[in-house]
Length: 304
Length: 310
Figure 1 (cartoon, one colour):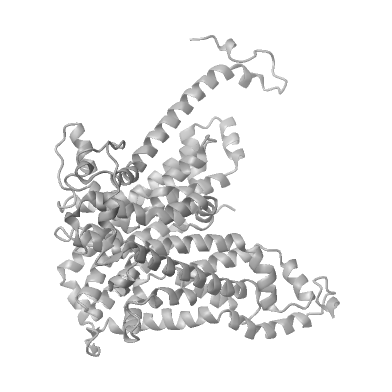
Figure 2 (figure 1 turned 180 degrees about the horizontal axis):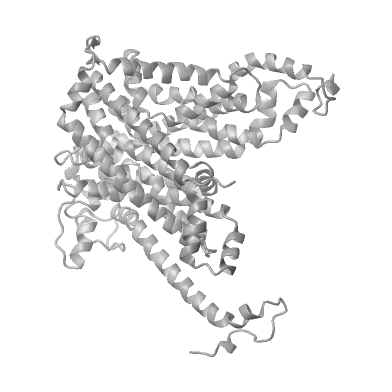
């Protein structure tokens, strides 16, 4: 054990607070030890948490016979065989399913951005009768479970012959049924100084021009948050796509993956892992590039 | 014209504002038109329609016939309904507190001026982002299978594994583990909440000689109760509606022996496998009412323990 004097100058501190100063070296050593302990614990725990994902990624590139016999993360042999095996469901390739998923997610994003921002602007900035009632309805519908409406919705869409199209998945977004984003945007618009709208108003801009040229550019962070979460929710959505998309040609990635599991469970774990990994790539990309917005979005709104 | 509209208006001249009020009535409804249409056509009407269907016998092919409360009576004697309710309640009661405990513990460890916070936060958050996907459910199915990762790990320390998903006693456990694994999103919310607690409180209590445990019990927890409450509501409502994991892991059956038959999965089976739309609507309404009651109870009880400051 080294003497405490070796670590830091003993001279009286210019900042005052002498008692704290004299115990500092030993305190610092304890702190350092604690910090190392804490970091090791956190890293170990993090590795444990991420191990399944890492295993999935590695298994995707392992030859089938090694996947279940070799749990280590360092592969001895690499192959793309798994991706080739899983690429087709029926006679269609995952290229089609990825295309479908992107069409659904992209349309859902546009729908949510347009319909929710318009509604939010009215609720946050315009004076009209029963505004508070409307806002209360928005809040109530945030909590409403989808199961309350899904069966009649399905019946209507199926009567209209829209099963096996993307309309049942996308149309509700254009009608602002993701009320959560309305709430999010209302809160955001309320934070924008009112003087800006008033200035535009004085210059003769009507509500739509004020919305388009003043508010919309300023609410970019809220729009980005809504985009990210709409993408992730739509990409991960299973229930809606499962009931509306039954024909292979309109399968999205999760549905195709599910079909792969059901139809070819003897096809090998490697194949399933390869396609699972592939299906997560877009989300992982979003995670990598939009992390700041993601974390802030969750922290301020509680989205998942 | 401009000066009548400037904010600094002499007192008593309210007329421009009143004019603005009436004029925006129409414009506001134009802005809200998509939402209003959706509210009526996609939310309100289907909701009442499903309430009506809950009292009918309807298989989509023939028109619905009114059967009164028969669907609800049938539920009382339906073993699968009770299994589904039991499985779901167990899932919520076990996984939500565990998930929140992990989230809070990790948030507290990460909060104390730690280097590399952003990296840890991202790493722990990642599972929540992926947790509800089909891909992760497929992964889980492999991990807990007989040849899976868990048994391989157990084999290393000489424990004979089992097929966790084929055993009715453990199948639900694997789904609970999956839900706890996604503690990252409540953790991020807790972290944001911990940042809001003024450092002065800790300093003052330290001067008064409070221990760390005491600080945790008397400062951290009380000031964090609104966040705990928020997370609790959010995760409870979310977990009641879990579906994907159970569907993928049991190939849509809810087995073995209905041990992973989530309530939503049972609704799905009745509605879209058996096309028993009337009964499924009744089941859906029961779920909705239960969620509403639980949320209301949470809010009522919250007055006793949630501290909103002054």
